[in-house]
Image 1 (tube, rainbow, N blue to C red):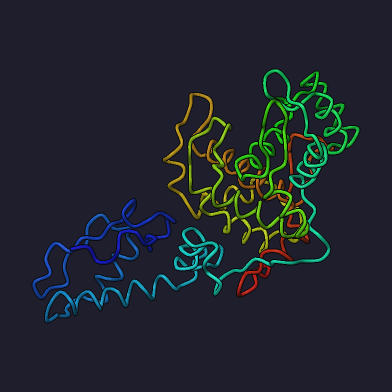
Image 2 (image 1 turned 120 degrees about the vertical axis):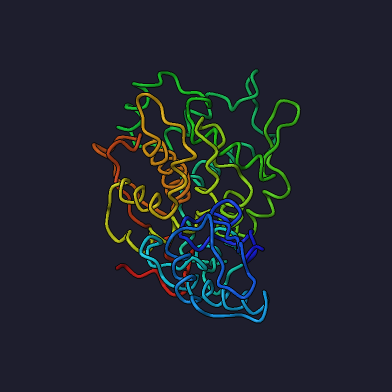
Length: 345
């Protein structure tokens, strides 16, 4: 019989659900401790040690004894989880917006949030006001608007660097702008009608309530509804998105100074080691490197930085995150409040 619900997070420290990891089976429960198979060593050994020699009146009593051990372990802080317990990791991954005992998100904050996605969305919203913004024959944003967005978004030296690699700017080559349009369209804020882009009523209502309300809406939609694997040609790796709060927790805890992306890559893979097995190595790139790259791009660049929750310092101020270092932003501390606070340590 199964010891506990397969849908809960596995207490072995993998970060995966029990059914996908170390499902425990009692092979003989007739008054004996039983033999535990397919179980990560430490927990299985602890259960066997603590129940050794004990006799039980039936399965229910044995179940209660096992649950006590598992619950104790699930509440124990683990170094691999940066001091969080499996129970806290479970809440972060499965109930990020419904665990107020662990984290809550500010509804109003001052000054208003600033983030790359807001820069591009506000430019798009302004251009779509009135009669709307005419689309190209291919249905994309017009190049004249893309050029304006480039000047708003990148510093002059970065614009030169990007132009050197990409040539003429269009929406498909300006990935952050293209992603912003995809996100806000999916969120119901933008639509295309008769060859023109228009803001929806939802977009206008959110704008009337203030930038912080708009930001909170986009944040929740992006974390909860949008597929982070969209258009990046890597493996699905849903744990990167499911554990977005763990990424923010690490930035809260360690992000008081600039650290290389590799610092967070390694800590993430330590916490969720099975991600490596989900990556297919190539003759030129090991699976672990692929996992590192996917994590950096999705969690650090396209999420933490793009939503203004982290600040990035790149080598020679390049716009491609080459040799980049990252630290938390003031917005992260105002918007995401962990309990207890994720102090550095």
